[in-house]
Length: 278
Ligand SMILES: C[C@](O)(CO)[C@H](O)COP(=O)(O)OP(=O)(O)OC[C@H]1O[C@@H](n2ccc(N)nc2=O)[C@H](O)[C@@H]1O
Ligand SMILES: Nc1ncnc2c1ncn2[C@@H]1O[C@H](COP(=O)(O)OP(=O)(O)OP(=O)(O)O)[C@@H](O)[C@H]1O
Image 1 (cartoon, protein in one colour):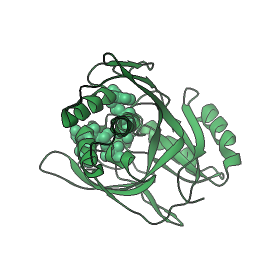
Image 2: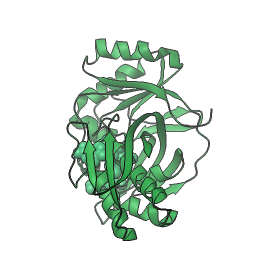
Image 3: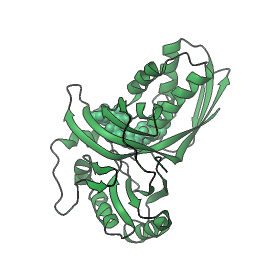
């Protein structure tokens, strides 16, 4: 079975409060990027096997795909063995939920290949144990997420939008971003507030802690906001990816070319459409 595991963007990310368990309650509108996805090849085998082609992504038991397999087996008592090959296309440490998506789609595929022994509700609980972004990938392509990330709700229609993603060579630690959130301060002159879109606000409360540590991300955001082709620009998740909502998909190469020339020639970039109402 070949499975695509898409990335996600946070169109809005509000951090509400720190919880007693060390996590934070959030409210976020999350959207998949169907065109930017990892690929999982899952086959029945004599013995378990896992391979991954990307440098910097663990291939041992700490990989979220292996963790998903182990949790699925513990849940079902299944003795089946699987060989899983992961081809990474979503950069990691990027705020794009790459590993989380891999875990969710591994869970879903194993359940299907095993005759659906695990009910959806229980699958969501297992997903939540794998990580806060994992449950989102078992639901709709656009969803309102709350709690730690395990509560999914239907959200108002969001249009599919043309976007450009730009990521510097460094990643951002998600735990570090949340840890720094409460006491972080704003850099003067940087726009942190929400940007009004026809369907709602683009805003990310983790920009404040992350920009305090990585000023170039703040400067990249301001550079994007000054471009006539860009309607809005914001960081996704805990970063380091910044994304711009474009006036037209035809402007993508102009924006990317300008960023490579004027911001950072080593930027990773991707352009395409978010999921949503066409
Ligand atoms: C930033 C987002 O990606 C936005 O979608 C998510 O909130 C984070 O999702 P994730 O990377 O799957 O996060 P997890 O792997 O569950 O948690 C990593 C660490 O981030 C912090 N964390 C995560 C989620 C959350 N709601 N509050 C937190 O404080 C915790 O220190 C946690 O130990
Ligand atoms: N299958 C996987 N793909 C990518 N990273 C993985 C995977 N399994 C474990 N990891 C580890 O988990 C870390 C975070 O992975 P992931 O890509 O989900 O986070 P992210 O891109 O920062 O997304 P977000 O910040 O939105 O959660 C990686 O830096 C890597 O070390």
